[in-house]
Amino acid sequence: MSRVEERRRALAAMLREGGAASQEELVSRLSDAGHPTTQATVSRDLDAIGAIKGKKDGKTAYLLAEQLSETNGPSAELDRILGEWLRSAEAASGMVILRTRPGSAHVVGAALDAAQLSDIAGTIAGDDTLFIALRDGFDARALADKLSGNTQ
Image (cartoon, rainbow, N blue to C red; front, side, top):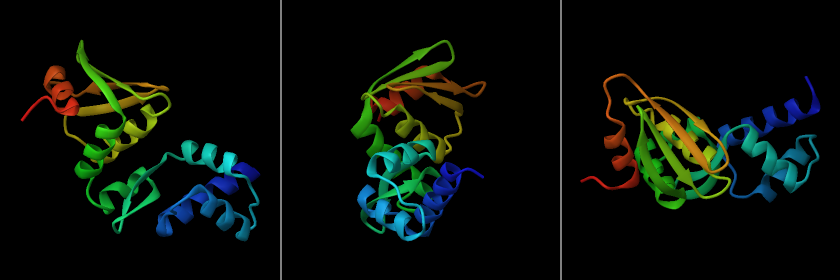
């Protein structure tokens, strides 16, 4: 296993064990665990392992997407993330296309994946665009409206 893989496994384990409030905290904890690194490297590693900022025990922390449902529930976390990062949602041929703030499509995608919505078959995230494939029989316009907050 490469040093990068070892460091990322250690980082993921730290997040599973209790999250971290800041990247600086993670730099310190990784160094203590024998993986000296920089904040810039931790930032890239967090992206690579799919970590996002979420709420744990009422405090903001870096978490893995799999932990969202263990905190304040996937729908509450999804609502928060959509409110913060989503710019627009549109339906297109059985898909929904979300536009996000630059560099944040993967954050929205991870939150959608963690929420396990029944109408979503899968997501693909770029930098500021997210494609959502719907399961058969679901309405793309209804999902786009739901995600953008245009429905009751």
